[in-house]
Amino acid sequence: MTVTTRGTLPSYLTEGRAVFPEGFIWGAATASYQIEGAVRDGGRGPSVWDTFSRTPGKVASGHTGDVACDHYHRYAEDVRLMAGLGLGAYRFSISWPRVQPDGSGPVNTRGLDFYDRLVDELGDAGITPYVTLYHWDLPQTLEDRGGWTSRDTAYRLAEYAEVVHGRLGDRVRNWTTLNEPWVQAFLGYGSGVHAPGRTDARSALLASHHFVLAHGLATQALRAAGAQEIMLVINSSPVMTPEQVQDPAAEVSQADAEAVHRVDCLLNRQILDPVLRGEYPAEVLEIVERHAGLGHIHDDDLRAINQPTDLIGVNYYNPCVVRSSPGEPADSAWPGSEGIAFPRLEVPKTAMGWPIVPAGLSRLLLRLSQDYPEVGLMVTENGAAFEDVVTEAEPGGRVHDADRTAYLESHLRAAHAAVEGGADLRGYLVWSLLDNFEWAEGYHRRFGIVHVDFATQRRLLKDSAMWYRGVIEENGLA
Ligand code: GCO
Picture 1 (tube, rainbow, N blue to C red):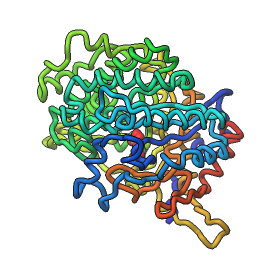
Picture 2: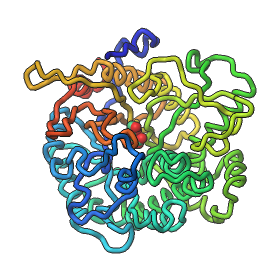
Picture 3: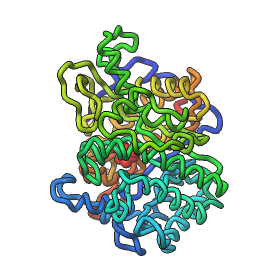
Picture 4: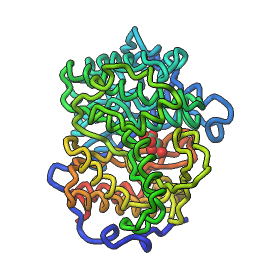
């Protein structure tokens, strides 16, 4: 079924030229556990996602990443696909348990060999690698020692960063320390929807601090090793009331304004302020102290965390919608959100049930560039799952994913509007290159611009991929 989103959008999100500044980076993103498969090959150790996906009831239909897109064996074919689309950049993540099966100590050179071959293949194709060191697949051994609730894990990430840089640093310029620390901390340790599946507010808050500490320590290690560009990728969303989604200038009651402010502190500033300003908002400290005490925040931590960071990578899918709701208990993913509801919006949604609000991306990029002017921005993920249908009757098969193309087009226009408004946006990476293992949803949700038949591993460009090739050629919507 095609969801028509266009009728509900203002015209600047649906029509007119939107050409980006010269040198704008166009690419696509993936993550190791979601595409590689080969979980027992080449000396790889188990990760928390192997354990979690094997635990009954955690992932839809009991799906696992055991085979996924078999990218570990098919990477050369996948790089050829990227080259065919004209991608200038490819963001992928390194599987920590391939490189250090136990998360520390001995290095598995066969694991590094895989990424070495991938980076060379990209180089030959003229595609710039954007390496994410950590996209959620923590070595299980480290989880057994406390995972991200343990301060030691932050030091282990820095050590691992240095190992990977030692092998790839001659060819890789851009290094992302972490992908979406908020999601890992609060869905992994708070609501338990993601691995390792713990459900405890205190653990989630400890994890959140240890993530930003890990970013700071890994940044120091990477800089010392000569890394040129450091990025932190976050799941940043503008926090808004339902009325503000309809009309950005809508009046907001004092109670709703307080709800917006508190959730913005939890989602965005809990991560960005320590990293970019060297401090936590007072509202965050008050919530942390109430649930976890402050003993885990050591005296010099904020100095260690506040390292020069070149780019913030923004993964944007939808806004975070809140309103004041006296008496509401805190959501398990949001310790400190007592008295706040997260209402569903009456707007078109993707197959994930996520509301489609492209204007939220403009608002977010402009806000980040105003509040944190010293850092460059990159959209490191944006995309949508829809119910794709392969039309085999057409030669070679086709996927007419008009709703995905409409989603991407409206968000590109929103990104362009932010550039026009002064946001320092350097590039845009589609999530995702390939249909893949969508975490707790398994293979039921398809985000790719390339369709993957998981039974045969056939790759098929969807219409959105061909549309994106044209966008890249024109440097936007011409
Ligand atoms: C993310 C994740 C991706 C998801 C995507 C869709 O960073 O949230 O990087 O792995 O697949 O966001 O949920």
